Image (cartoon, rainbow, N blue to C red; front, side):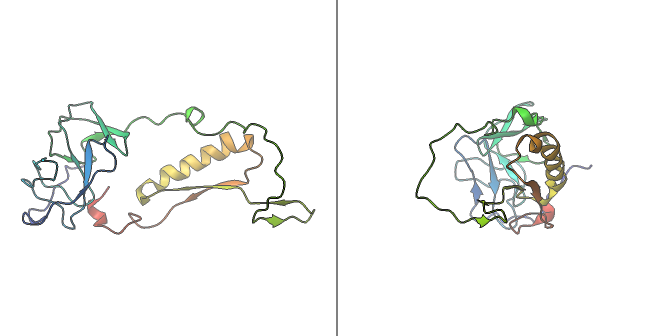
Length: 193
């Protein structure tokens, strides 16, 4: 795969730089401007872009050494594969994804709930079964925000069905809620990842 490039005309040096930093602990921000931002653009925090950054892509807010964690949503989303000076375009060629944890090691609520006292006088919107019992349909839906991980979602759903679902008879199914567009929010999809 070749190195990504930003069209020389992309971005507007006179336009106000718009970025989103999701969490205070993030060391990257997302460029929001419709045509991206050109090199030399100063962000509100004082970061100056050392190269053009397309809309929807990340920019380093701090100097990142090779191997440093790239943090978005206050979570490690990858590691720098080369030095990325503050203001660099953080793209798929600059990031090594972290290894996925084993499903049985995820810190999720997979343990049975403690027994609670029976509730009296409460109702819920459910359905009546043919045998007179009532219930809800328990289906776990896994949804992504981008189409490019649909294959990963399908793989995860398959593993959950094989490895976890048999341990939870009260859950009827697990489904992947994939979509067919590049992103769930319209952007310049061809330039986004």
